[in-house]
Image (cartoon, rainbow, N blue to C red; front, side, top):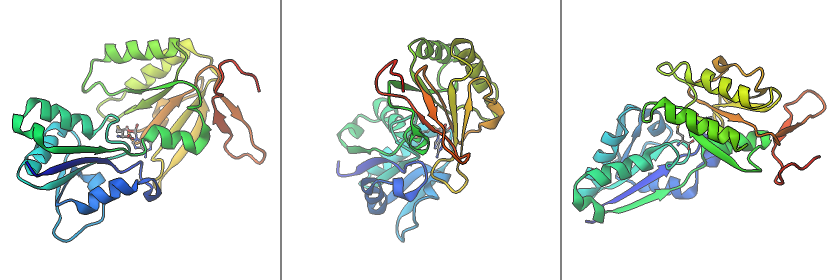
Length: 254
Ligand code: SAH
C-alpha cells in the first residue's frame, strides 16, 4: 500500500507552538481529517480535501482516514495539543486493530505536539519540576470508579496532577468531586492552576488554592493542575501572578 497516514498535534493554539513537522504534514496532505475547530486552525489549500467531523466520533474519523490512506491518499489527521494525549493517535490504532488487516501495511506516523499540560506549566513557571501524572476526568470511555481510584492513588503518591477534560455540559459534577477528594487529602493551601485556552486569544490562567478552587471557574477548554506537597509560589512585587514551581528534590526548602 502506498498511502500515508500521519497523525499530528497542532499544539494548544499559538502558532509558535506548532512544530515544523506537524505544519509540514498538514501542508503536504491530500486530505485533512479532524474535529472541525482543529481543521479551522489550519490554512486552506487549493486541492486539499477537508473532512471535518463532530468531536465524539473519533473512531469513525480514524476509519475514514485509514480508508483514504488505503486508497493511496496522503492523509493527515489533526488533533489539538499532542495527538497521543487523550486524542486521535490512539483512536487511529483502535481502528487499525479492529479494521481491515491490509491497513497494517500502511505507512502510519505520529508527529508529537505540545500538550496542554506542558503549555499550562510553562505559563506559570515550573510546576512539573518533580514527578507528575495526567488524568482525564472524562467518564465517557472509562467508569468513574476507575478515575476516582487513580486520582486517590496519585494523591497518595504526592504527584502533581494535571486534569484534562475537567468539566463539560454533559459532565458537570466530576471536577467538583475530584477537588473534594483532593481537598480531603492535601493541604488547603496547595496551589491549583486553572489554565484556560492556553496559547489562544482568550487565554486565562489563574492560580488559586485547593481550599478555594471553584469548579465553576473551569470549562472544557481548561487544564486544571493540582500541586504536590512541595509545589509552591514565588510571589512577585507589583501584584502580578506569582511563579508556581515544584523543586526537583523532594522535601527541599527554599
Ligand atoms: N490532545 C490534547 C488533549 C485533548 S483532551 C492535548 O494534548 O492537549 C481535551 C482537554 O485538553 C481539554 O478539556 C482541556 O483540559 C485540555 N486542553 C486542550 N487544549 C487546551 C488549551 N489550549 N488550554 C488549556 N487546556 C487545554
